[in-house]
Image (tube, rainbow, N blue to C red; front, side):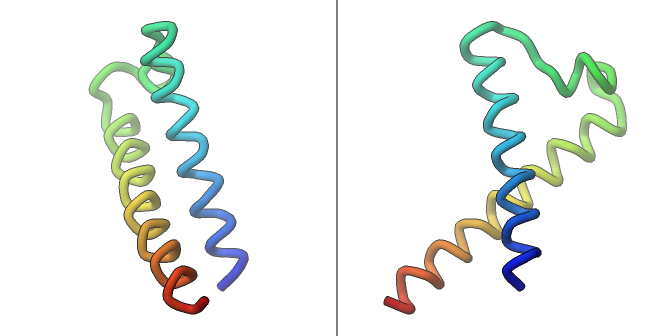
Length: 66
């Protein structure tokens, strides 16, 4: 399970970097690579969002375990 958690965390970090680029430079890396509003862009955004939600659950599990 630890490997899956690390993969989810990496995907979430990549999403956070993209949001940082949007906020600071008004540059969307995902749209630049895959095209604005393309199916692949939507899949990437959905994947990052799902990984973020799973990471919230992992965080609460670690807090309860202590």
